[in-house]
Image (cartoon, rainbow, N blue to C red; front, side, top):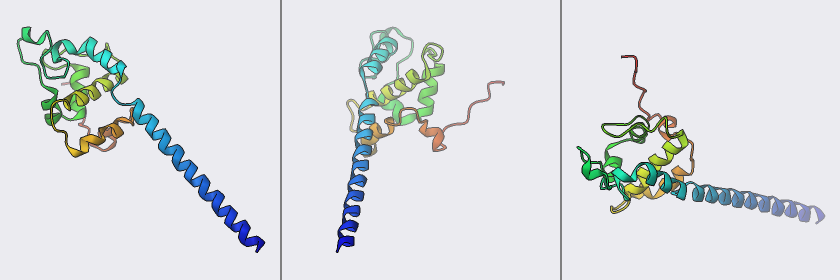
Length: 160
């Protein structure tokens, strides 16, 4: 009878440790998710660098946009037509009349602006079911998913 109680005790303690590890993992993931969504730092950077042309909701209606020779893109259309890599490249290297921000912004800041394009693109439209889980993807703050998953476009040969 003593061995039965000892075995039962070991199983209970083992199960408790298993639950404790799972709870710790869930808590850690929730902290990461909360810290990697849209935040004040992103909003300030967007206000400083992008709002003038792209507007408060990313619809291309900023105060400077009316005086520009071309219409600014609406982020709701941008996320439909462009990959994350293309959006990142446009921010870093510039496109059309948009200046390159690569020398002025660090890689993390450029990544934050890519996320802001995605966050702002949701305002005023029905989001698809998979977009509801974008925060989970953003939780992996520094993982270049396009490259990891093999969706990244090959770099252009700049020697031409």
